[in-house]
Amino acid sequence: MRIPPSLVLLALVGLVFGHDLSRLLLQRRLRKEDPQPLVSRQVPAPPSNTFNQITNHFPNDPFYGPPPANATFLQNYIVNDTFYKAGGPIFLLDSGETSARSRNRFLLTGIVAELAQATGGMGIILEHRYYGTSFPEPGLIPSEGLSTDNLRWLTTDQSIADIAYFAQHVTIPGHEDEELTAPGRPWILYGGSLAGAEVAFVLREYGDVIYGGISSSGTVQAFKGYPQWYYTIQENAPRDCVRSIEDIVDKMDFLINTKNAVAQTELKTILGLETLRDIRDVALTIAFPIGNPFFYPTSTWQELNWGWGRRRRRSSWSLTRSLRESTRPRCRTGGSHR
Image (cartoon, rainbow, N blue to C red):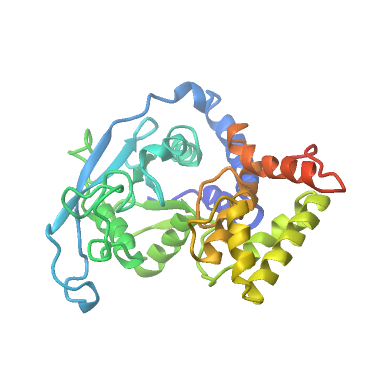
C-alpha cells in the first residue's frame, strides 16, 4: 500500500511550518472526505495490551555485560482501530518519557487518530521501556530498585530496536487473522522531543522495516549544559522581570566564582535550601519556576503556550508576582501567555 502523496505533503508542512498548520490543513481535508467530526466518532479509552519484548537485543555486545535475569519482558501498548479498514497502514506513537496511558489523547483525538481516519489506518501507542509498567527487570517499579546495573538496558539502541521488533512480530487483538506486521504492512512512526529523536534514529537504523515517520521537534543533537534553552525566555518574558532575574543570576555567579563559602551558606539558608551541599543544586532548584529543562513536564515558561490550564501556568507567573513585590520597576503579570 502507498500512502497518499497529500498526506506526505502535510507531514512536510508540519516539519517546515509547525504542527499547528499541518493539523489545520489535515482537518480541512478530513472535513471534505468525511464530514462527520472526529470527536463524535471517538471511543472510550481502549484497554492496554502487552507484548513479549526482548530485554537485550544485542546479546553479543560486551557493553551490556551479563545476560538479563529475564530474556523478555511485557511491554505495554494500546490500540485504537476505530477507523481501521482492511489493508490500512499502522501509525505507531512512541510514548517517550511517560506511560502509554498518558498519551491516550493523541490516539483518540490527536494527530494519530486524524491520520488513521484519513487513511483507514490503525493507531498504536507503544510504551517506552522503563516507563509505565514496561520494566525489563522482574518486579522492578519506578519508585524502587533502580540501579546502575538494572538500568543498563535503558539505551537508545535498545529502545529503537524495541520499535522495530514490535512492528515485525506483534499480533493485534481482534486482528489475529490479518498480517499486520512490517515491512509487509506500512508502519509510520510519530514522536515528539525524545520520541521524535527516536523516530529519526529508527528510520536511519531500520529503514528496511519501517515505512516512514514524523519526527516532531526531534532532539537529534545533544548539548552539555545547554544554556540556549533559556534564550527564548530571556527574549520573550516580561522585560522588567527578565532584568531582575538576570541581576539575581549575576549575584549568584559572583558568589560561585569568588568561592565565598560563607555567603553561599547564608544564601542557601535564606532560600531554605541549607541541606543542599552543592551550590549547583541550589541554582538548579531555584531555576525551576523560570523553566527547568531537566524536570519535564513542568508548570514553567515552556508550557505557557500549550493550553494545559491554570494549574499548569502557575509557577512562571508566581515567580513574576514575587519579583513584582520585591523589586522595582514592577513586573507585569498581564499580557499574552504565548
